[in-house]
Amino acid sequence: MDDLISRQAAIDALDVLYQEHRYKIPGKIETYSQYNEAWQDALDRAEGAIFNLPSAQPEPLTDKEDV
Image (cartoon, rainbow, N blue to C red; front, side, top):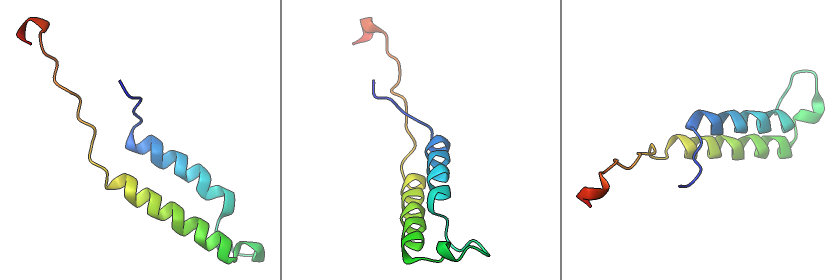
C-alpha cells in the first residue's frame, strides 16, 4: 500500500515553507523582493493543487472466499 498523508498534513508542510521566504513583512525591506513574491506564488499554486486533488478512497474490503 502506498503511503498517504492527509490534505491538512500537506498544507501544514507548505506552511513551514511559507515561513522561509515571507513576502512583504512590514519594516523588513529585504522581504519585498521578486524572489520572495515568486516563492509565495509558487506555494499558493501548490496549495491550490492539493485542495483540488480528489479525496483518497480506501478500497472496500472483500472476503478472500468471495474473490
